[in-house]
Length: 405
Image 1 (tube, one colour):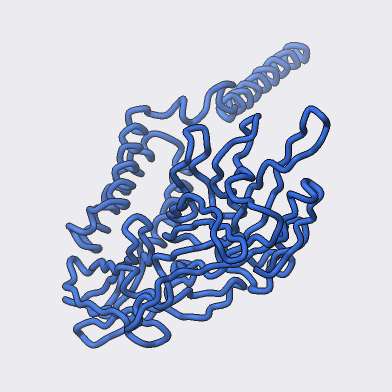
Image 2 (tube, rainbow, N blue to C red):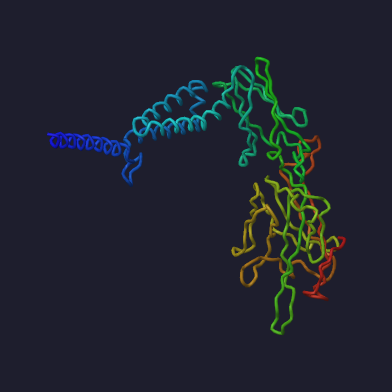
């Protein structure tokens, strides 16, 4: 009898153990990770994700174009919130809930700050989106606030140089100002120190006002300094003699120290301007003129500069016709070297005999500090860069030392 009871107990124990194993195995299977090669996207509802994606694209489009101009900031915000909520609901039904919540929080943090920054509360005017259109040469800015009209002024060192009043549309109005109307000189010097301040003052018809500074970099428009340096071009004859065939002239324009000067070997000493040169992005022209004893012997094509891009009409279709003013710019020549690697001014085009030659860099600014004066100047700045050229007596051994023109 005892043997039968032992067998029964053993059988019962084995059955219980088997059930426990089964339960444990079942739990392990339920907690197993997603099969290899699958992700939450591969198991998500593709239609829901697709519709959510279209919602986000639509939201971006509305936020970056003109929809707010029609609806106003508050209705616009409600539309955006509605689209965003619907999009996240579709995502919620398509992928893991925790991932959806994380995505929603991240998106809200990303998008809410710039929108709220542009949403003016109360009647105090706000000024934003200050920019310069390089094509039309206009300064623009946007005024926001809950009032019917706004009066805006541009101040130069605290004095009004332009003003305009406009009605508000959906708590917003955009002003545009021709640079030629307000420019009174560069805002900074070559050391990036502010020397002239420009600001915008806006007053609402309800009596509130605000003043904001215009970034100095937007109103550096006048080339104040220029310099030149020479590169001697030589050729070797069949007899082994080295002859000077011409020179390449390079120009530097912008703002830099007035102590920069011509130096030995046709160079220009820019030691004092190291890391202290400010290129000017604006509209102006550059021309090279070469003089000997005050008499002009050569002039280059006129270079037109728009921003930092320089273009000109070459004397030959094989010559370059563009460059950049963000550094030394090779001035137009009248011929190319044999390998067509560079252009230069032929010796016979400018050189008459040994002597002191002045390589003038002439810049004519469209925007200059006196353009709005009662008796405006012409915006022209000329630099004299002179070297002694002894090509007849010394040929390629000429030291090209600085001289007084």
